[in-house]
Image (cartoon, rainbow, N blue to C red; front, top):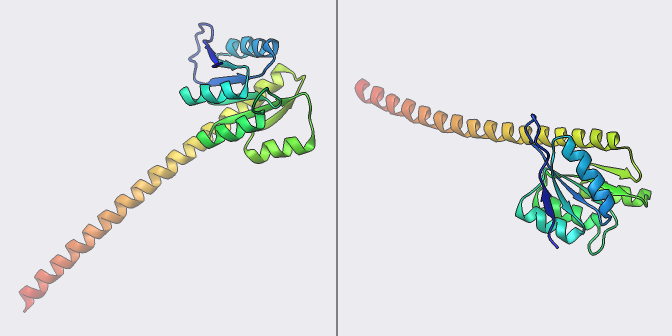
Length: 178
């Protein structure tokens, strides 16, 4: 089954971030959808890892909130596949079965953080806000680096043109002096 997209309620705030909620428990998906939509996020829902990956292929999300234990492919596999598709996607891993090893593995695969169920919605929202801010800063840094590299190439071309002009003027001066 494919994930379904649930539009946020009409609000005076512009919707700027898309969040995919991946959990095989419908009640958890619906509670998180309702809460995050009320916060102004555009929400996608997936009940399996496969549905999450397919939905992400169709239209990427800014952040994915995924359960670790899913039918089919695990949340860790979802994390790895999404990071392969978009290294800047932020992923929050949720689990009711926490272990230090799985938390370390999730972080090594690129998860932003790990939420132990049950968790407070305000704590989740804080982590989402922080993850999206990190994503924005990373994107801004990449854009600035690209702009700087472009300017550097432009300056190198200008410098080469100036050296050519200097050599040309120098040859004319030598010819006039001879």
